[in-house]
Image (tube, rainbow, N blue to C red):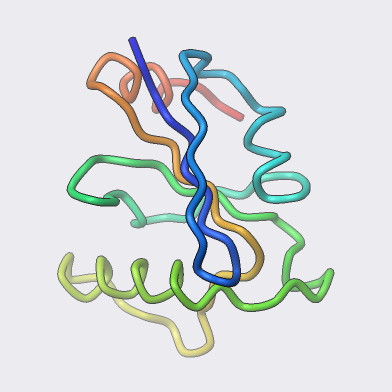
Length: 112
């Protein structure tokens, strides 16, 4: 069981951290700079299944818009038949959790 936390910074940079710990809440919180909030329907990155998380108070804390992550999210919403709500944007770093099938099944059954 192998996974990865991919962080998309507000400047578009991407960093990667290998992990096998599906309950690594500390790493997710460090990646987004605070308490995490799940991003619905952001479920694919580089052709792989993922779960996406942002800082749950990123907007309130004045974190800058993450244009690259927002673009990727909107693209998935458009292709998946979802609706883009006016003004919906991701702020601050975005953490994506991805991995092999066993890892993703374990992540999706974990409640952060």
